[in-house]
Image 1 (spheres, rainbow over the protein chains, first blue to last red):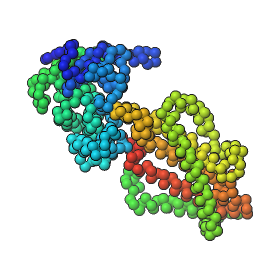
Image 2: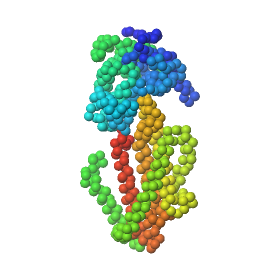
Image 3: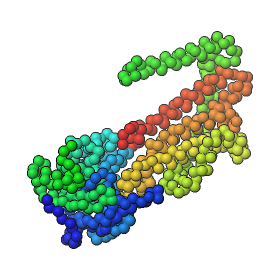
Image 4: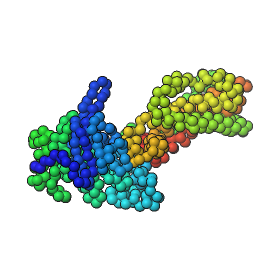
Length: 260
Length: 260
């Protein structure tokens, strides 16, 4: 297994988390959620954050996205400190992300208010085709299946042409077959557009199928336990010995036995 | 009838009509058996209704009542919706205003009649003021609740795509709370229709409420009293059914089903 702890700045660094710690104070008690997280993500890289549930993966993603400011440390993107959410970096939620009062077209066009009408229509059309929602342009999210809703949210995110995408367990609420299909679709779009992606999941298989690198977080307070390079080319054979070796290594790291 | 089975088309009309016929029969025979000289039978009420229609006063009274409700309810909505949205948007303001609102809200508009007459004298304005009061508070409360129940993901998406606070309010928070606002408006319209009848009994000399009290005072015409009462019921039902059609509009329909 190849493990690397990135210390020195690399050329093409997109995001750098520097000594990020987070303490939540509630009812006079303080809970330490993130403990001194140091991480570099390269331009165009697909990084998965995995860890036991409740460990603080989502908190870390929210700090990177600018929705939470860390108690200490900072996150830099393109060497600029993150001060808040930004349309260049779009967050995709697990559920309740798309707007139910807008049609498919309306949702995809939501972030495109600065474009001219014809440009907007062109973009909408392009991304509807990309996620395979042709024929549903005028449909409302309540008329779509769970998988289609997530496709719509991914399309809405890509439509504003961001540099980065943060995905917070985006397929967590889908059934297992739809989830597999969605992973394939996401990889296909990512390979076409090469955005920097940070993807939070509790599903280790999902992480090993998708990521260039998997960042394994410890239980709360989360610190980086290990960073695993997934050196298998896409499309990945999920029964190949290398795949199983990497997956089982991470499982072992998190402390799971191989038998249920 | 199986409660799970979809009712057949004829059943949907047959049973309600049967219930209505039974109600009329019960009424008819109660009048005969009790030997009352005051309370009219359905036949007398029908004749009374025909008499009212022939004298053309009924249409004028209906028009006057509807006009007052339209102005009172309309101004309550025009003021209540922006205020409610603002209170919901700025929780600090809401905390200041809420105690006063909670004290004013349970006071029946009927209790305001003397105050309304001091302010506006006997006439249209006093009646409209009472309707306004009855409709205003439910609208404000529905808007405040609507705004504070907007899922945080929706607001976060709005910020993420770079919308200004004013645009987030207009394009995210307002449409997200619209289903709840419509429920509040419907409730308020029902109250407005209750209040107009009461207000017209004291403050003015036209309208369906005045018709009820006038028919009693000038010659104890209880057939006309009950005919006017039925008219009030029918119009209230029509108003409510009309308002329910708003819930079918596609951009709010999502809020009235158990789907997101």
